[in-house]
Image (tube, rainbow, N blue to C red):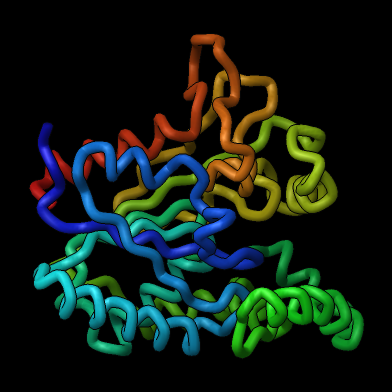
Length: 269
């Protein structure tokens, strides 16, 4: 058994929080702990701004480094979590503690669909985020603000973000994209998939492969099931494999995380 050199920090995305009762990451942490690797969690707000969440991640990283006496961390981030940690790395001095950053469907390059959504009347967009904020405040979010978060997914915002938060040459960056096969693949995201598909093309129910490319792009991960892989599937929300069939693509989202683990091992991280 070959362990990673550095522990793993899992950084969640928007809409859910890290919880001991209902783990955001499903069966995924066991992929790492079964090899003896230590796993930590971001614990930032779900609907917090990038700047506010980055401050939480900064404190979390400093606490982990102090308590475990490790030098660095391998970060795996899903969705908006990738933006949160990039800000912490570049703006809050956390680069010295990060060995690698793996992002999974993070909107590094923004969303043209969000651009269109933000042309809707502001009260309507704010209303859409209001109920989400109320729910997440009950779940523990200290400063949820969905409307500001929506704005951070626009192509203009991410263009500026990328200019202001360049990659650190001492950190290994890699990114993954996933896609659904059709709009009925995931009933939770059926409407958003159809909208994004009509505007931008294939997507995971929220984001397109072009929108999530960053660092060493590992390509589009597809399943060999009839469903494909949705934004929810990427973090094992259903807690089971896609299919028992074999063929082109993966049959379980855990296969993608095993590949991530092996890549980090091969790179001595």
